[in-house]
Image (cartoon, rainbow, N blue to C red; front, side):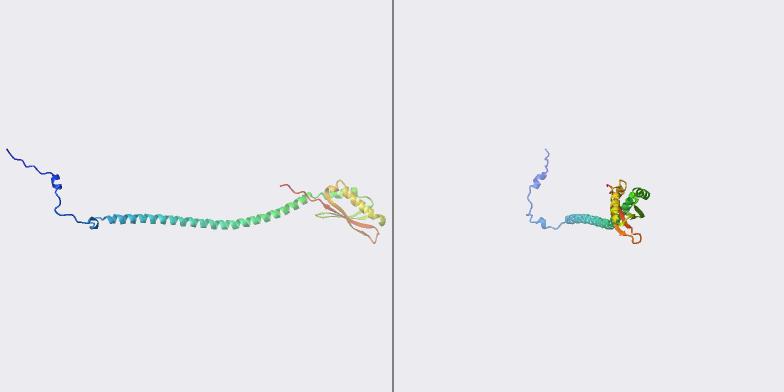
Length: 208
């Protein structure tokens, strides 16, 4: 009968204790790898630092561009603000001048027709009053006249004529006031001379 040899299992070998104790300090042993672990660690930190540097640089560049754009816009605003202030000042001056022009235009448009005034005065003036001159001014009418008759009674005729002009239904619509003045005696004729100043009514203000 043949004898068979059995191979011992590996488990039996692993159970054999080492021939001497392991007194190595693994953490203090040099790194024998081809690419050391420190390279990857340092590379990772360097990569992170590079990314952060690029990120901050891009943000700083964007901030610089924004500030530059803000400065440009502010400069443009300052220029436009100066031009705007000058335009507003010019517009105010224009409005003042326009108001004056409109007032003069309204006044000229509101002035009555001179021929109508002359005809009306000729119709209402008593025969004892002789019209010497009519001076049409921008603000009114100056009537120079002479009273026919005795000087001692002429002053009453002047007052009556003044009241007549004030109460006239046509002339009262044209004149705001009628005042007799400069009543004097003509040394050559002995007659009483006087002046009546009739002031035009101001045009009514336009409603805005």
